[in-house]
Image 1 (cartoon, rainbow, N blue to C red):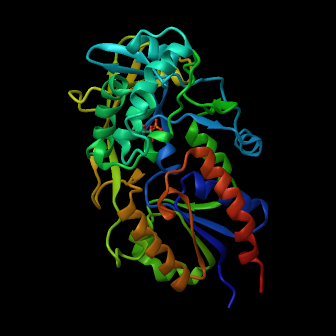
Image 2 (image 1 turned 90 degrees about the horizontal axis):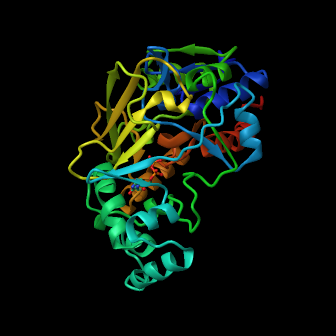
Image 3 (image 1 turned 180 degrees about the horizontal axis):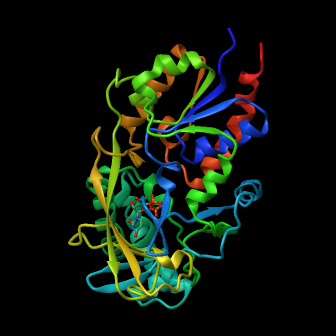
Amino acid sequence: MEKEYDLIIVGSGLYGCVTAYLAHQAGWRCLVIEKRAFTGGNIRDEIREGINVHSYGPHVFHTRHQEVWDFASRFTPFNHFRYCPLARYGGKMYNLPFNMHTFYQLYGTQTPEEAALRLRQEQGLYPHPRNLEEKAVSMVGRTMYETLIKGYTEKQWGRKATELPPFIIERLPLRFTFDNNYFNDPYQGVPMAGYSPWVDKMLEGTEVRLNTDFLADKDYWMKKAGHVLYTGAIDAFFDYRLGALEYRSLTFEHVLFEQPNVQGIAVINETDSRIPYTRSIEHKHFAFGTQPVSIVTHEFPQTWDKDREPFYPVNDEKNNTLYRQYHALAQRECPHITFGGRLGLYRYFNMDETIKNALEQWEVLKTKLLPA
Ligand code: UDP
């Protein structure tokens, strides 16, 4: 019997939206099901007081992949924003990422040679770093670790840096030039129209059902589609049959100020453990806004439970092992379902990696949609 849809996409985050666009272009009958009342997942933004507010934390698009940049800029132009956040600790401000400005501020070193010499003394202590603390000290020295990493990391992940895997800190650039650009990528910016209009453009022409919980009616939806792309949490899909994976969650406090400029920069990382939030975000600076008022958001990391939105997978050994078991289960039991995105694959993806992954996965997916 012919199915109503060739493809049902569960979740309208970036991964789902890219795939919906490709499926629509290819002429497939496609439906997007979204549990929340809006599209875009955690990249959603909304206009408040004329300011584009990143509702679920700051997002800056950056990539080194030409094809991803070309794809992304097809839907709206990007502005020339460069992410150069500051860190605040003990009432003082420091430059990020870790670069010659930061070495100067913390160690007084003025040349790359002096900075490298200063670090070598500490690097030798941990030739084989076993955890995030050892890795961070060997990268940037103990003072910088204590000032800029320890407090932030322990708030962010809710556990001691000595109990976290080293790879988390490897995401951050470390350079011996006076360069505050957080990312090494040649392409960077924020969509001029905003993130929500960006993904909504990808969804043009595709049927979308909001406020619809796929898992509450799984069998019903499965009967309607030849294939399903599921971008929700993989453990929830299997009703936590093998146990629950761990995630970190976030909450946000938005404050309206009757003044045009509060902190003078888009993001300040609050690296001091005495401050309960990790970041202070003044949204208008992502878009060079000139409104008479401003909105600042404080970002609070939270322990995740089933009533909260999962934001970050906790990719330690224990959780990765459980994920692999779910992945094997999916391969055994679900030939007509593809799992994708940060929650479906239980992996931290930047936005550009999400797009790259969706573009590559589409090449596989479209062969599954071909009539037998
Ligand atoms: N981090 C830190 N201090 C900072 C910023 C980041 O210690 O000021 C650490 C922290 O452990 C974080 C990791 O570096 O989880 C990765 O940071 P990134 O900015 O990539 O965070 P994300 O994009 O995940 O928010």
